[in-house]
Amino acid sequence: MEILITNDDGWGVQGIMTLTRLMTRLGHVTVVAPDGPRSSMSNAISMTKPMTLEKVDLSTCTVFTEEEKALIDVYITNGTPSDCVKLALNVLFEDDPTRISLMVSGINHGSNASINVVYSGTMGACFTGCEHGIRAIGFSIYTHENPTDLSHFEPYIVDLCRHLLDEEWDTNMCYNVNAPVGEIKGIQWTRQCRGHWQKEIEMRPDENGSPLYWLTGNFVNEEPDATDTDEYAIAHGYISVQPCTVDMTYYKAL
Image 1 (tube, rainbow, N blue to C red):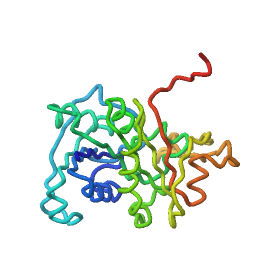
Image 2 (image 1 turned 90 degrees about the vertical axis):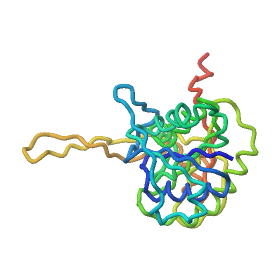
Image 3 (image 1 turned 45 degrees about the vertical axis):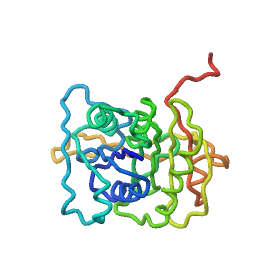
């Protein structure tokens, strides 16, 4: 099996290193990742600048065993997560993109539940993958701490990939998987929770007193009593598995 991996935190961070190591249990892994953080890039692509693509030498990397290294090829780029997918499909797998059996993105440090899926570079890469008919899964954990303890999440990831690969995948569909921090009680199928961010801009003056504006804010769950949402599952110790689609038509209005 050929597996493509990317993320929005950049190569070398804990999440993608863990995901890369785990995916060697399923087959050969090709990583195309940004050369630095690209969080909240959504589906952004590089239209006004050329992109680089550089292979990474893993010979001195101590994260992987020699057996794992034999199953891993890593490339970094100055592009976005969606660029990573397009570079993989149009450069590295130009001869036959259908060789990619699965694309995984993450493990993202920070929630991609609720409205965050719209902003997420992790999920933006998945949407780009499913645009091209690639089965894609995004993995995230509900904390921005990096590094963080992933030991409770790791045992679920490979089996979850196997299970989802056995599911029937509709066109333009992918999966958004979010894990809680700490003990996991199980897995729940969920829908996207309605929510929004408030008080999103904070002004902090620079050294000359001129205003600078920073994104911040608080997340507001608009349906806190609903028990079938991603936010509910994560808050109650469950891994949330949410099917997503790139079809943004609001059919009730037709």
